[in-house]
Image (cartoon, rainbow, N blue to C red):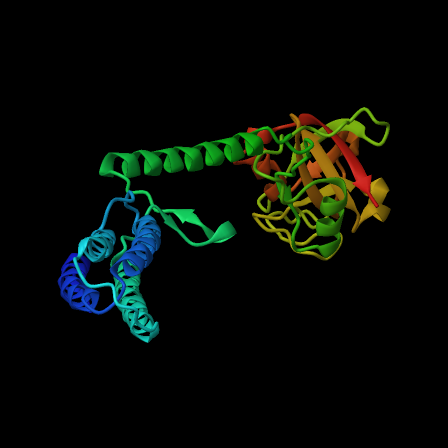
Length: 318
């Protein structure tokens, strides 16, 4: 409950003056006046402390005024100086102390209940934090700075990823005879089937001593014969049928023991991994290999006549 401190002190001042004026007729005014002046001085100190708690500068209050006025009144009163006991003086002093205690309690209660809270800081010790009001432009500036920082971090991350060295260059075959699991395994061993997008494609080193150079011709079902003068057949020396997409080769009849082997053919820096499935009598024409349709098509030719005869590098893989 809010109590007006000035109003309370004013009422106490009026009551105190009336009470002491009556008491002065019966008690020693000089002694009582001195006592009350000391009480007024103590009240002044108490009031100054109270004002410091409320955050105001110490100043003269009604408490000091009415106690000092009562002391002066008693000192100046023209009363008879009869010798009395001290019981009446003690009673007066007790009543004044009780009034001062009541006023002090009310004032302290008001100071505790109505004091302004400093909202600039919240918390205690390490937990103290500042409560600062930011304008809309300041909040926008902070948000922009944060966004710029995030973009800078992303940009730096992208730059770091760009500076990573590219993978080693690899040999990637144009075509592999996937009907033969051994051909696939040899392709994985000597080439790269699934290179990284940034990997550079290169030609194999055909000068490493494992390669041979020779002329290669081409054939298809139309000009394939069964050795008895019958053309347009799919039969081969290995028993595996020839097709328009076969990634296979034929070797000279003198090398029939190579049937089933894996042959790597390199032309113009490009590689095809094929299976030896046939033989032919083309050695007398100075040819080393005869390419099935799937092989010369992988090198970019659409027909036997388009390929003709070309010099290639080749080796047999094991």
